[in-house]
Each structure stands twice: as structure tokens, then as C-alpha cells.
Image (cartoon, rainbow, N blue to C red; front, side):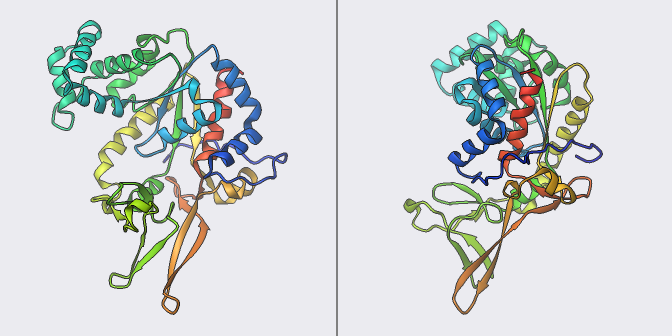
Amino acid sequence: MKGIDFPIFKTKTEEVTQKFNLNDPDGRKQYFTAKAGAEIEKLKRYLEGNTFVAYLIGKKNSGKGTYSKLFAEAVGSEYISHLSVGDIVRDVHRKLSDLEAKEELIEFLKGNYRGFMPVEEAINAVVNKDQSTLIPSEMIVTLIKYEISKRSKKAIFVDGFPRALDQVSYSLFLKELIGYRDDPDFFVFIDLPESVIEARIKGRVICPKCNVPRNINLSPTKEIGYDETTKTFYLVCESLACGGARMVPKEGDELGLEPIRERLEIDDQIFRQLVNLNGVPKVYLRNTVPVNKINEYIDDYEITPVYKYEYNSDTKKVEIKEESWVINDDNGVPSYSLLPAPVALGLIKQVAQVLNL
């Protein structure tokens, strides 16, 4: 992040020389066991009788859900719950269209919601969340509490809270409000350059039939097509049911960061306010490593590959070239972007440290 020097987490060790396929679940399991086996076992023992609350702090599309899911994959999904505030709000929309679910939700809100806006108006703010009325922070907290009340008690990764500056103070005391008073809490700060976010957005394509997403530069399908009329490459959906459908960009993605610029600026302000907070443990996740430090900190298979294409007019085939992805971070430093697994490895090891395991 611009102006903030995030620590680089070293995943390279002399003891582990084997290369792993980090896109394969079995390969990731071997990878996590080899590089963080001791921490994973300690976390499993801890989670058998204890929980924690972790707040994922980062810009939109920074990988908050991905890293928490990989953490659960490594230590056991039976111990971990990923709580997305965005998903909770969308679920409220669904419940309000179901009479029985609506009555249950309203009954809970009447017994638990405390705020300056009447319950009915607060609910309308949720329903019209894309309109001018903002959802009161008190309502967001109550909806989080409602969602947690329906789940068995597990360690929680909270994704999407705080999402406004006035919610920062609530986040400091959220664990008391949701019934986790005696459990440790900490912030997980995720540093992802805007150049990476923009590349993910601009390269995103979906199948028009099954809606499966891919990225033409970062996660191609097995078959790459070439349109000789437009002189452009495209991905072919791998699902047999789609009959070789051409994957297409999402409308508006060509604009990159501009449609979410305001959201990114708010995320940046929240990030900077919380990173200077005292009294709460912090975990730092960094998606990039400077080019001049890569050999010391990272194994080459942990770097995100980028794919480039050339069309051979003689053979009528697309030739694919794989390279390590180099970008400029937010401070203008040439850096390699990392795959999700090594970032999640840093999460595993640092959470074990925060919990004093």
C-alpha cells in the first residue's frame, strides 16, 4: 500500500526443496504440511476447544475470502466460519421475500436491534441498499449477530466489516456484541497493489452459458481461440455442457478500477486508520515481493504465472507462453505477484503466533 511498508513474509526454507502444484487441492495440502505442519497441528488442537474472531481488512477484490478459505482448507473447515457481510445483506433480501423467514428475522431484530433509526426504516435501508439511504451501522452489527446465532460456534473470519469509517469503533468491540467476549480477536491486513486488482478485473471473462469465471491472462482454459476478424484471443469454456462456448468479458470490466474507485478510497482510509491501532494484535499479508528480493524469500513455483499468446498463421494454432507475473506495487517497486497459497501460508503461521501457540 502506498506509503506503508508491509513486512515480507518468508516462505522459502532450506528444509523443503520439493515443488508443489498450488492449483491442486492435494498439492496444496502437501505444501501446507511441508511448510507449516507444526503450526497447523497446534491450531487444530487449539480450535478443538477454542475460537477467535479475525477481521479481514483490505481493498475490494483483495482476496479476503480466498485466504480465509485456504486457511480453513489447511486446518479443517469444521473449525472455521467465513462470515461475509455482503452475503448476509443479500440473504436478508431473500428472507424478506419469504413470509416465514421474514417473521423470524423481524422478531430477532425487534429483540436485538438498538439504533437511532426505527427497525422498519432500517430494514428499508437494507432493501434499498443501492439507493441513497445507507444501512445503519447498528443494523449491520445486528445482522451479523443474527447470522452468528444460527451457526455452531467456530472461529470466525469477518469479511466486509468495518466497511465505513463510522464502523471502525464498532469493530473494536464487536466480539462482545456477538457472544465472543472471552475469545481473542485480531486484524488481518491484506496488501494488494491496485495494478493487480485492475488486471484481475480487466482480464475477467465468463461463460455466457454456465457463468463460470476465468481470467484470460491469469487463469486460462485448456483451449485458447483466435478471432481472425478482430485479431483477438478468447477462452473456450471447458464444460462439455456448454459445447465449446466462447467466454466473454463482463460488461463494464474494461473500465478497470474506475467504477469502484470511491469504494477503494474508503477501504484505503479504513485500512490506514486501523493499521495504526494500538492494543489489538495484527497479521500482515502481502501479495507481492520485490523482484530484487525474490530469491531470498520465495520459491519460484509460488509466483503467479501470467500467460501470453501468439497466433501461428501457418499452423492455425495459438501458441501459449507462460511467464512469472511482474507488476509495480503501489509504491512503484517492480514486484512479483504471489499465488494465494503462499499468502495463506503467512496467515497460518502468523495466526499461530498471535494465539501464542
